[in-house]
Length: 324
Image (cartoon, rainbow, N blue to C red; front, side):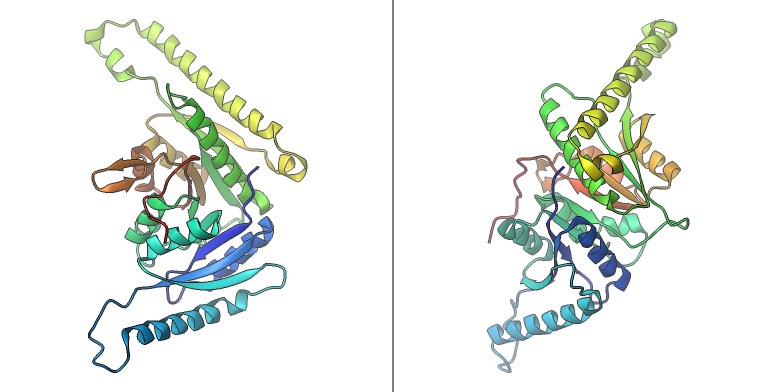
């Protein structure tokens, strides 16, 4: 299992909920991780300071004020058993965080959703999405909500289709997804579900009367595909479990779910049915005319989520944000 020992918490609000900061400390404690709280200020690109202060001095004072505010925010969370640091960065918020991740080798970025509106609208805020698209390490946009019954439900969405040319990428990314899901099981009251959405290519076309496909033969083919996906899903879980030892192996006891349909609709529906408050999934980024975008399926799923989310990228992802 991958280790998450150096975590950055991006504080992008002047008044974040205290319970989100405390929850971050609790999670860092359960992982045995160092935790850095970071804020970002905009660079001083204005010459309209009227000679009252030099642009450099004005930025220095803004940094000092932000650092003092950050210390005030986290003071109630400081504890002897979790190494906690603070830092204030300068620049575009998403780009500044990504540069810090690259320079200081943070293994995960946490943040609360943007303020206001529904959770899925806040997750899709401009800063959050740019961070998700560009950050080379996993990004967790995690709220403080806990289900009424006091149990957390984590859902890991994996892809066992293994399309030609993507076998190694899928296998490696699935492992990262399960690592992140297992890391969340440090909280003993968390239940883990692993979901895979599947479909038979061309099924709707083959069911059309004009194709004259025998319905019974099509149903048999459909069952064959379902069984193959089920076998691959079970093999993925068993192979992953075989690499775990001690308490990790004991905690890893997921329920498996094979759901039929397009992932962009089938997965959100399954999350709602399971009462998920956290989803872990992967994204294979692609570069388009408008810059780096997360994979089409992942982005469509995000547009329908009402729970917190952790996104992982495959090994070898190169951030479009240049190093400082």
